[in-house]
Length: 197
Length: 369
Image (cartoon, rainbow over all chains, first blue to last red):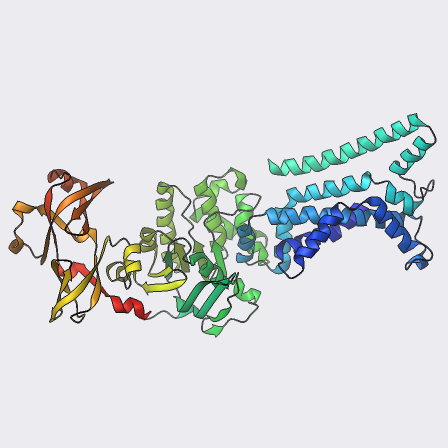
C-alpha cells in the first residue's frame, strides 16, 4: 500500500522535476535529496506529533493504526521514488524528449512516454522505495505501537522477539523477511533485465 | 506559378544565456519545396529547425502558418502538422513497428488504419522485414530508415530533417539520400533539411539558405549559391576554392579588368572602377596546360596566369593542384589529366579560365549587411 502511494505521488513529481525548469527548482531538488536520507525515527516523531491526540490531526484518531504506519512509510519512501525518477528522466537523452514532442505528443502523452522510456530505471525507484519500507522499523514502531494483530509487522516483531530473548523466533522471522525481500527484488530484477536484453 | 508559403518566419530572434543564437529578419518555406539549411557547426541550423518545430520559443519573431499568425503557446493542432527527424535515430524502446506507429497512435488512430499506414511506410523504406525486430538490434542505416519512416508516416505538412544522414557511412548515406529525394519529390512534401554538407544540400534542395553565426548569409537556388555567392563566407563555404581580394581597375560594357596583386584578370561585371572586390573562381573552371604549349589566342579563355606547382592532392578521381601565381591558386583536374601532363612539384603551368568563370563580390555589399 505504502509503496503504491509513494509511486503514485513520487513518479509524477519526479518526472515533473526532471523536465521543468523554474525558479526554486534547485531548492526543491535539494529538499528531495535531503528527503532521500531522512532518518526514519525523525519521520516517526513528526508523524507521531501530527497524529497524537493533541496534534493537528489528532481528531482522526489514527495513531497506533495501520494508516499511521502507511503515512510514515509513504513519507520515508516518496523522496526516494522522486529522486530516482528524477535521475531516470534526466538520464534520458534530451533529444529523445524533443523527438517525442516533435511527433505531436500532447503534454499528457509526453509525460506518459517519458515514464515508459525510463521504466527500467523506474523499476530501480520501485526497488529502492520498497527496500526502505520493508526494512523500516523505527518510525512504524513509534506511530504503530507494535500492537499484536493490528500494527505489528515483521521488523517490529523481530525487535520484540530479540528484546524478549527469543532469538530463534527472531532469526526465523528475519529469514522470512529476507526471503520476502529476495523474492520481490528478484521479481523487479527480472522485469528490469527482461526489458534490457 | 509561385508556390504559396507554408511557414513564414518574420523578425526572428532567439538568444540563450544572453548570446544571440539566431537573428533572421525573414525566411519562408514554400509549399512543396525542399529548403536546405546549410551552415557550419554552431551556425544555428538546428536551433532554427527546433524553432520551426515550435520546440523552442523565440524572444522575438512571428510565425505565420499559411499566412495566419501562429499563437503562443502553439496549439497542438498546429504542432501536429510538423514532424521532425534528428541526426541520431532516437528510437524508442520496442519494435520497429511500434516506433513507426507511435505518431499515429498519438493522433488517436487504431488497428487496421495504423497497420496499413505503417505497412506502406515500412515498404517505402525497405524495412518490411524488420517490423518485429527490437530497435536495439538495428544497424545505423536501418535505425535511420525507421526514424524517417516514423516521421513521414504521420503525413506532416512540414517535414523537418536535422542532418538525418550525417552519422551514416558513405554508401548507406548516398543510397538513402537518393531514396529520400525521390520520396520528397514524388509526394511533393514540404521539407526543411539541415545539413553542413554542401553536396547533400545540392542533391536534395530546391533552395538553399546559408547560415553563419545565426545570420542568414544567402538564400537562393543551388546554382545561385554555388556560382553567385553573395559573401566571401558563402563562397568559401561552398568550396569556391579561390576567393581572392582585388580592385576593379577598368570597366566597360560589362567587362571589368580586376587587379589582383600585379596580375590583371578580366571578368563579366558592372562593378564600378575603384571598388574593392572578392574574386571567386571555382577550381574546376580552370584549365591547366604546360607553359610552352600555351597559346592564349587559340582558346576562348580571356585569362591566363602562369605559376609554379606548390602542392598536389589526389582526391578520388580528381587531383587538386595548387599553383603559386604570386598568390595561391587552386585548380581541379581529373586524375587522368594529371597523369597525362606528368605533373610534378615545381613544374611551371599556365592556368586559363573564362571571364564568365569569375564571380565578383563587391566588398561594400558584405559590409552593408
